Image 1 (tube, rainbow, N blue to C red):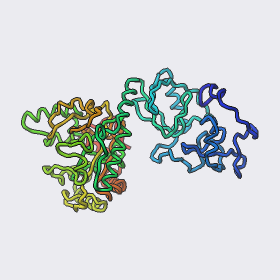
Image 2 (cartoon, one colour; image 1 turned 45 degrees about the vertical axis):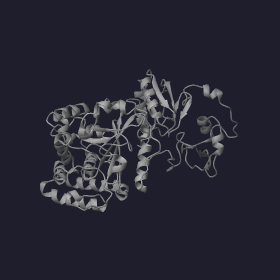
Image 3 (spheres, helix red, strand yellow; image 1 turned 90 degrees about the vertical axis):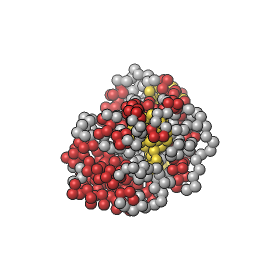
Length: 499
C-alpha cells in the first residue's frame, strides 16, 4: 500500500507460503543472527525475498540472484550492505537524501498533485498524475533527486514507483506538462546522432586515441539527441587560456571543469552582446565597414563551431583538423594570458612567476605552450570541444554562419536546420556567455584532446591549476570577490554567491 498507493497489485499477486514467523520476513542467512537474507537484484541493490516479490512480481529473479550474506538490519527496501553501492550507483551522484530532505521534497510535490505530467520512458509517452501518501518515519521512500520542473533529466538511485510499474534506477525519465514537447523530444531522439544523419559509416581515424575520442563523441551525440543540438569548436594555442578560465570558474561559478574547458570567462563584452541575435546584429554593423568575425569585440564574446564531425566544413572539418587543432595567428596570446591572470587578482609583482609556474605545469602534462614562451610539447596540439545546447535555446545562443561569420540565411533558423534527417553541415557562430555556458541545464560540454597524455591527465592538471590560482588569488572570500568584480566589470549578478 505504501509503495503502490492501493491494494490492486496485492490482490493480483500470487501468495507465497512462508515457514517463518511474521516478525522475521524472508529467509535468515547463515550467521545473520536472525536478519533476513538479501540477494542482489539487477539494479545493483540488495533485497529480501519478500522485497523481490514486491518489486518484481515473482521470485524468478530471486532464484537467479546469487545469495549475499547480510549482517545488517534492513532499514529500507533497496539498501544494501555497507559499501555495496551497486553498478547503477555513480560515485559522482549526490549522496542519498536525509529524512528531512524527503519530507521537504514530498511537501513540495504535494502542491503539484493536480498537475498532469507527461513522461517519456522507454520509447513511450504516457500521462501520469502524481499521488503521494503522507510521509512517515518508517516508510521506505528514499529519493536522491526528483525534479519535475524545466524538463530536466531525472536519475533516481532508488526505484521510483509509478502506479503500476517500477522504474529502474538506471533509466532516465523526462517530465513535462507539455505533451507536444515530450513527443517532439522522443521524435528527435529517434533520429539518432546529429553527425550520422544521412551518412553511411562512422568517422574513421588513423590514430587509435583519436578514433576512441570520435567514437565517444558519436556516442554522446546519440544519447543527447532528443534534447540537445551539437556543435564542435576546434582550437590549439588558446588551450591554456581556456583551461585557466575553467579552473577559475570552478572556484567562482561552481563550474565542473573535470569534463571540459571554458572558452570565455571575462564578461565585460557580454553586457552589450549577451546572446545570438545581438551577436548577429553586431556582425551586421561590422560588415557595413568591411569587417568580419576577427574583430576584437566580436571575438570577446563568440567562437566558431561546426555542426557535424565529418561532413565538409569550409574552414575546419573536425575530423580533419583534430590532430593539429585550429587557431588564428593575429592574436597576442602572451598578453592575453597576463591580462587574464591579472583579472583574477594576481598581484602585478607575481604575474611573471605565476605565468612561469603555469607554463612549467603545462610541460609536465604535455600541453603545448610555444605561443606563450614555453615548450611545443607534442605534435598533437589539437583540442575539440563538444558543445551541446538545449534545443529551445539554440537560436538564442547561436546563428548559422558562413566563413568569417557571415549569416547563412539558407540554414536559418539554426534550430530547424539541426533537426534534418539528411546530412547536417555548415558552421555556426556561438555566443559563449559564461552565465549560460556554466549552467549544465542550458549547455553541456565535453573536451577531447588529440594528445593522449594530456587527455588522460587533464583532471589532475586542472587540480594543480586550481591549486595555483587558489594560492595566488582565489583562496579567500575577499580574493574571490575581487576576481568576480573584475570579471563582471563591477556588475556581479545578485545570484552569484561567494563561499
